[in-house]
Length: 181
Image 1 (cartoon, rainbow, N blue to C red):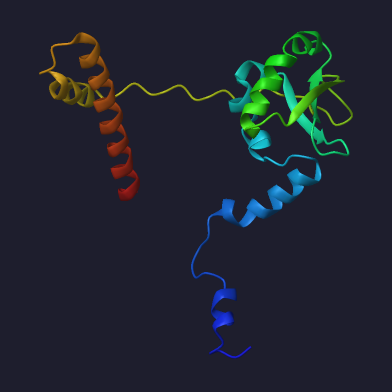
Image 2 (cartoon, rainbow, N blue to C red):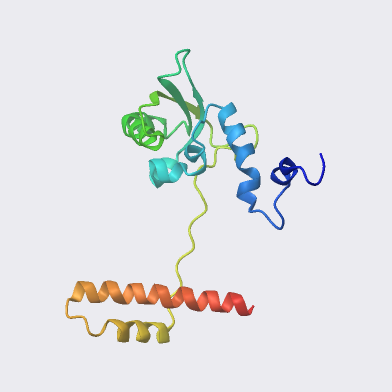
């Protein structure tokens, strides 16, 4: 191709840095689709799809489609002790997963049980890392937030405005500190 060919410009990679998610998007999608996950969000945001309590005890393993393409089977991995409780919650899990797809893609869910410690030690550990506790706001931020909402007469609205002001002031202070450092 010559340098003046218009096709060479479109084939060129963009200049500068690309987000890592953009670089890996196609590979993650291909890996997910090879295991039956047409919607990769089901894998990446499992706890948001089904809830923290269910996600702590299960993991999606694969989705198998029948010959017609409709009525897929979702296979979930769980520990043996949690399997009876998860078995009772399968209709709710199915509804939540189908809501993620946007249609009734999953008609059946099967559970696969595993020991808490398998062949590779710790493989069945489902509980995500605990979230960090939020820091207490700076007293100056609390005072500034109270001054912002002091004209409001409704107590509930005033409390909400103070919380909003604290969040905005805290985030703007964090961003300013990041720019300096």
